[in-house]
Image (cartoon, rainbow, N blue to C red):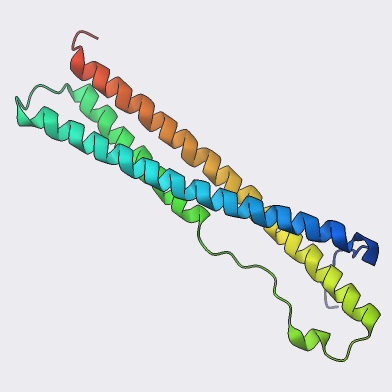
Length: 165
């Protein structure tokens, strides 16, 4: 017995404008998430440059000036920012989306073409929503890593400036 893949139900043609509007919204959300992913990469790169500059300045003088705890925090911040950058990059990786096969539309009746169009819009909307949910989760964790890196950077600076802490 062969198992057939069940197709999701296709709404009536009256829902076509609603599906089109939702597709526009999901595409806009996708673009927004991708822009935020690029922002994560940019801000993480800036923070890495600041950290490396801070390390260079502290190493110019006495090498024993930076406490080991502060150095460990800076290394942790660098790792967090590197991971956040990789996550920002992953948000912008190309994803597979359903495509309309022209052969499916040839010699179909008007009703069948409308049904095929609605089925495609449903499949595309579902795929975009799932991908956007994943992108949003990755973005959340990337931003959280950036905040963690900022806390580690600030803690390292405080530890270096006030050795009694």
